[in-house]
Amino acid sequence: MHLPTRLAPLPPRATRAAKEKEKAEKAAKRKAAEDAQKKQQEGTDVSSNDYGDLPMIGSQEYKPSGVSRTTLAQISEKYNETTPIDEAGGVEVCFRAVVENARNQSAKLSFLVFREGLNTIQAVVAASDSLSRQMVKFAGSINAESVVLVHGLVKKTPEPVKSATISHLEIHIKKIYVVAKADSQLPMQVQDAERPLPLEGEEIKEEEGARPIVTLNTRLNNRVIDLRGKHNRAIFAIKDGVTALFQEFLRNQGFIGIQTPKLLGAPSEGGANVFEVGYFATKAFLAQSPQLYKQMLIAARFERVMEVGPVFRAENSNTARHLTEFTGLDLEMAFEEDYHEVVEVLENLMLYIFNGLKSKYKRETDLVRSIYHVDEFKLPEAGKVPRIPFAEGIQMLRDDGLEIGDYDDLSTPDEKRLGALVLKKYGSDFYVLDQFPLNIRPFYTMPSHTAPAHQTGAKDPNSGYSNSYDFFMRGQEILSGAQRIHDAEFLCKRMKEHASPVDPNSDGLRDYVNAFRYGCPPHAGGGIGLERIVMLWLGLPNVRLASLFPRDPNRVMP
Ligand code: ATP
Image (tube, rainbow, N blue to C red; front, top):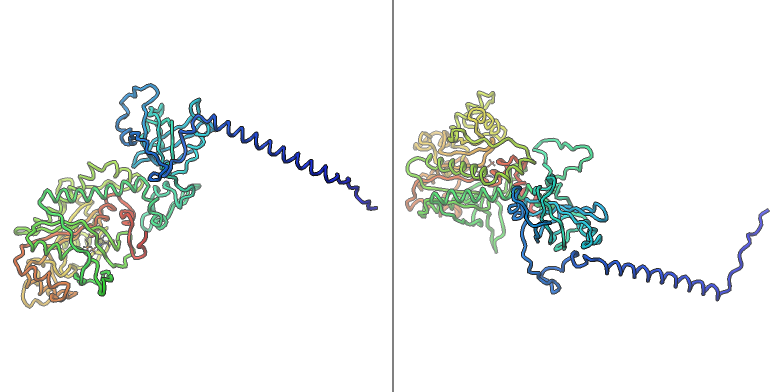
């Protein structure tokens, strides 16, 4: 039988209200006790002024401290492995750095690693009578990539710290303030940027349990974080170094730096690879090279000119070595009798750059090569750059089993193959290929003196060789150059008979041709791709890695 449940009689309404009141009073008491305890704890936070978020610098709340600061580079230089630290308990320092990582080891101990440029150093925050646990917790919880201001003591470490570049020192933190906080969730980690990308065509080998490789695309989409990788800093220091060495060498040789226009009224070099841009009511074109202007300046009696500037190419080349905007290192110079006078300057220039990189950028080079393992770049032992006539290069390839015509252009695989053969024969990763077939060079190239182009009524004026050359690093082209035609009439003839003829009277070429009517000395020069040098010096798998914000057919952002 189902018996009805016996319900307890309800307390009278007044009693119920009293109970509720009693409950509320108890909760309030408990909260007051908790608040008091918290307050007391805060009151006893001996470090309450020694950590926290700084007001934004520039705001009214921010009061400059005036405390003089040092840098990690200065600390590591001043207290090197042999200098004793005299002050008992360490030397007081104050510096700003980035938190590479932070972790709470326990309630009483946190570890951080600070980064500044290529330097990293470990730091500890340990609770004591004068340093609160709250501060330990705060420091160990700072988001990676935040910018912090640190006051601390530099001490020698009993054991080298493997995870930091400054391994013989550590910082014992006394105060730490966040100057600029990084989000807790970043689109990618800096450590991800520091892992190697696969080479072209190489399979991604992922170790079990390791973080997945972040693709080049993701890295480039988040380039600000990507560039924080130490090797990236090194890549761009080297790139800057190449530019400086280029200018230094040439200035010492009497070259003057020039800036030629990048907006042109007409596509002057004849090719289809030119970007068209709106120009008020009409249109303009982005310069594919400073070629014509460099030569006009030789005609203007500048004798020796050089330029470091952007070069735009509307080539739909989705390769690991082509960009649509790259940096051209260009030069042009008058010579006396033989264009090889200029080839020699160019060879010495490149050797100066390579030797400068070896002596001044060893640390950066080693750092990048520790990620992208590549053989040491071999310079010619005898100090003499192999200068190989094109015909001889073709013969070397044929002897190696390649079927190729005398005047055929070299494909990228052919170039790489020849590079390997030259390395074997001459022990050099750097060489020059001279006397290219005329028909694969631009209209302004001087034909070899034996070329039919110098005879009137020649059957094929584009056959034969030319006074032109390419320079190679590890079997890839880095420089293209030639003796240019400095005689207006001969130039007009070559323009018309070239395989891709151009009109000497066209808007883009008239002034250029006229420049040679006023007496211009014989001259030659070359154009070098800065990003290519950096890529090949370091063995990077992609030229994009040598461009801060690369532009290619699929990317014009960020
Ligand atoms: P490639 O045959 O490699 O496409 P190119 O013959 O068109 O080069 P040049 O016009 O002679 O090259 O340019 C001179 C130098 O500029 C090259 O040797 C190379 O170092 C660099 N360069 C040319 N095109 C590019 C590009 N699209 N991206 C990056 N560098 C380039």
